[in-house]
Image (cartoon, rainbow, N blue to C red; front, side, top):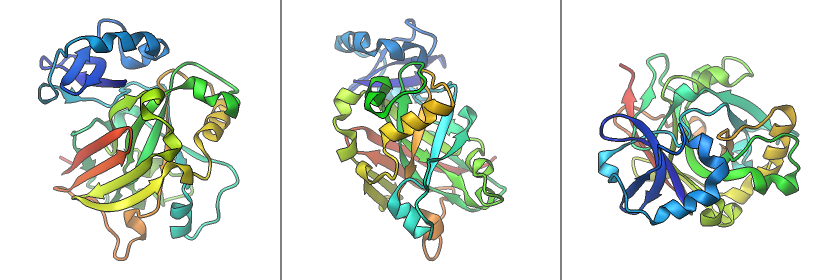
Length: 277
């Protein structure tokens, strides 16, 4: 099952189930998708209904427009660690994004006027199903609502102002998230899926999810130790090698570009790049 957040033609924010022909609107069941994730098995019964809106009639929102927190993982694929000439970290490197930095599928990611070093980072996002704490790695699957594609767009110049990544990761509308959340039973064994990024149709990143330095159960165990994880929280698991910053010459996203992040078994997130107004 695929779960999606969107704006219907009258502009109202809604959520529902994504099908081949469009979306089934379930927005009357809960104020937003994160409030319904605990009931995912029951929502599957609604997938038999006819769609309420075609995709061309809606605006995609980030699948979770209102997360309590977005926890991002730095340096978590060996290829990315090596291209930066670093040693593998002994513990996960965690930084945060703010909800207002995210845009949905097909919505423009904004290249800021403050810097031209706007870089792509294709990633897999894990969405938490329910409030939890001190989750053991063997129990991690029980708290996963599903998976989505993520583009952790990075303003490298600002990211490198200090050892803290936060400024370069939180310019408005620089993170792509979507197009939907795919539940675990539909995604299959996520570790066997492939992560790809394409810039203007050219493949620039590729890795299998099992190349993670810290796998998904390890990340859930670690993060749920230092904080409560809430329903709808997003863990963005890291990017692979091939980012623009380490290419010669560097390859930055610029207005007029189109970037795609694909995770096989999950979907394709596509965003145009636009200049800051």
